[in-house]
Image (cartoon, rainbow, N blue to C red; front, side):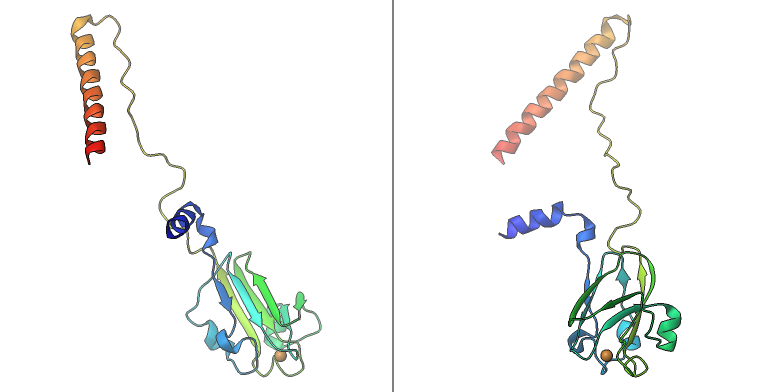
Length: 173
Ligand SMILES: [Cu+2]
């Protein structure tokens, strides 16, 4: 089981290591959390998920910055209810959430996050660059006498013997 899991991890692209952020942690989406404090120090990346859990008196609205600032509730970009809402973060930039229940946003039930690019992708090494495996011999020189031909033959024999020894040692070890 552990080996299978390891293989799965190794074979899985980095995007799978997305993070579920439970908004407000154990307090959830409620009036008792300061979400400005909650987001401090957290990183929200494309591919991550915001998980809102809340009671029946609340909802989750995705709103514009101006509606976030003013707590306007009449024109949400998206509106969710039901107590369990998962917001997939699909684009970089700021996102704004409020609770549209009267008085809740102005009471602090509002959340602003800034989504960054995928943080799990290591930088510097572009994918798809094959390691340099130059095992093919150089092209034989044309009409350059027996010396170089003999040299090539010796090299080939040396490589063959080395590989054979390597296989033997591998089996012994
Ligand atoms: Cu509310």
